Image (cartoon, rainbow, N blue to C red; front, side, top):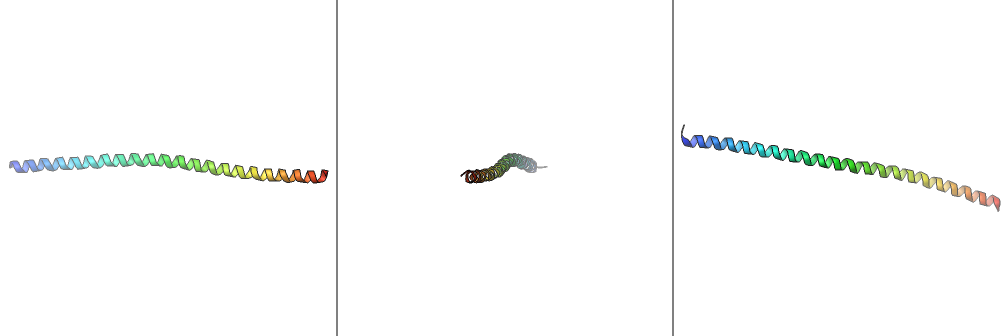
Length: 80
């Protein structure tokens, strides 16, 4: 084999190895970033669920306050 063919073969192997290595590193980085985003989304969803439950609880308390105010008004009318 001539020296040119040997150098070309070594270059080909090096290029393929470098490209494959770059692809693997980029894939790992992408997977890591997706995992981090999934964690952030999960935290966000938990906050949304908690806020929704608090809003429901607040609505129930508002209704209870309205009922209590009506009862007080009725008692004041009876006493007057």
